[in-house]
Each structure stands twice: as C-alpha cells, then as structure tokens.
Length: 283
Image (cartoon, rainbow, N blue to C red; front, side):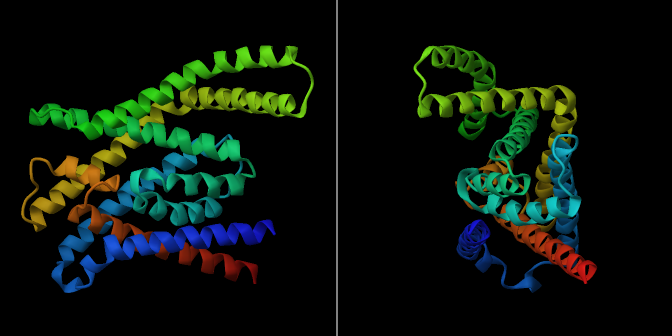
C-alpha cells in the first residue's frame, strides 16, 4: 500500500511538472534550428557546471549524517530538481523533501537536509545579487528583500526554537498524562534533535556549503548573462533581476527557459543511464 501511494504521488507531481513545462516553456523551443551549435554547447557547459555543484552540495550535506548511495541520491536529484524549478515560488521543494524523506525513512531528516541546502542557496544568492547590484550602482529589488526576509525568518526560528521547546516541555511535564501530551513531547524532542543536527551541519560544513552555493549562482548568472550577450540581443541592465523573478515563477525569461529546457534534458538522460545501469547490474 505504501509503495502504491509513493508511486501515485510521484506520478501526479511529475505529470503536473510536465504540464507546467509544456505550457510555460515547451512551445518556445520547438525549432531547434534557431539555435547555433555554439549556443547549445555553451548552454550545456553552464548547466553541467551549475548542477554538478548543486548536486555535490546536497550530497555533501548528507555525507557523514545518513547513508544514501550515490546512485540513489542522483536518481532522486534528477527526479526532484525539475519539479523544484518548474513549480512557482519554490513550492516544488516540498516534493524534494518528500522524496528524500522517503529514501531516508525520516521526515525530519529529509526536512533538515533540504532546509539547510535551501538556506545556503538563498544566502549565497542574496550575496551574489547584492554584490552585482553594488557594482552596477543599482538598488536592491523587492525580490531580494523577500529573500532576505526568508533567511531572517529561518535565523530567528533557529535561535528561538530551543527556548520555545524548553518552555513547552517544562509545561507539559507538569500537565496530566494524556495522548496529546505524549505526542507534543515527541514533537518537541524531534525539534530539539533536528536543531542539534542543523547546528552540527552549520559549524562543520557551513563555510564550504556557502562557497559552493556562491560559485554555482555566480556561474549560472554570469554564464547566462554572457550567453544572452553573445548569442542574443545583449543582456539588459535588469537581466539578473528578470532572470531571478522567472526562477521563482513570477515572470517569464527566455534565458531561464533555455536553461531549464537543457537542464531537464540532461537530468532525464542521466536518470535513464543510471536506470539502465542498475537493470543490467541486477541481471
């Protein structure tokens, strides 16, 4: 039954992602002849560099914390990344949390690892955009302030939750025994354990995760800006802001559409190669 539910959830989410892709992006890239060989090759290089770094970052978070085979990890990455990109406002990350939680047999672990990954990814993005805005003599956009707000909320929760858990555990221990009390104490215990894992990840891997994230965003934004300048009409002054808004599903950007299309093709090929390899290995 559990396996059937998992298959149903995966099929439904991937079908929705395919529909979003078809309506938002697919129709714009039907004529392959419109793109030069140089454009396609440069786009492939950018996609590979960025996603090797992003996949390595998430796998680095998992290393030493929970055992997850590299092939299993790559299959999940290839399956969840398009959903994360295509769903608006990064709501696709919920599916990513679900898939990794399923593989790790722990909702808490899946939530922690993806949350840490998203935190450093967003923090690096804020740093890159702020730096480029200062160089260009431009102010920060509303989108960047929204990202800063997201990071601040996570930081506040990180420092506030231990005291909140401590207060409610103390209160619940004095309350009469009940099923609800037992459940809430278990939740508080899981939150405290999760915060310990997050603290360990930040102290031992935080700097490397941040540098990997900065490098990935730097390559993607600089690479796509250069690609648009060389093979397009020239990158506009607001290219980065337009690109980021499109990445959040707010607007449409041709550069991002090209990036996403190539990314999905690369990930699909990678997934199929791993699947065929595993089948042949089994028998």
